[in-house]
Amino acid sequence: MSILSRLFGGGGAKRDAPGFPAEDYNGYSITPVPQEDEGGYRVAARIEKEIGGEVQVHHLLRADVLRDRDEAAAVSLRKAKQVIDEQGERIFR
Image 1: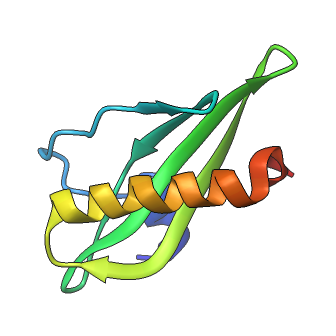
Image 2 (image 1 turned 135 degrees about the horizontal axis):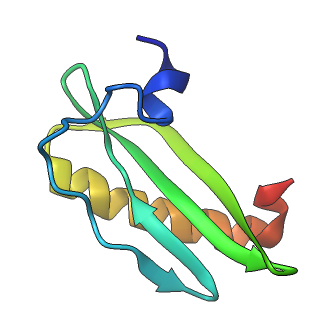
């Protein structure tokens, strides 16, 4: 299965696994969505922000793979915050 289909819900994540709650950070909403991958879970998150009345979405996907799903979610949150701090709204371009 391609990385894009896993990123956009093509079966990469377990269907019965509960999702992680979104966290607000500096006006952004971050939802960790670790992707099941060979040997563990790939660091991934959905970053959203309303700009001009329209919700903008950025899908963060890192090469990092961790064995534990909860740890991958925690790292996903940390990496998303780092991207927001470094790039701000440019992530939506």
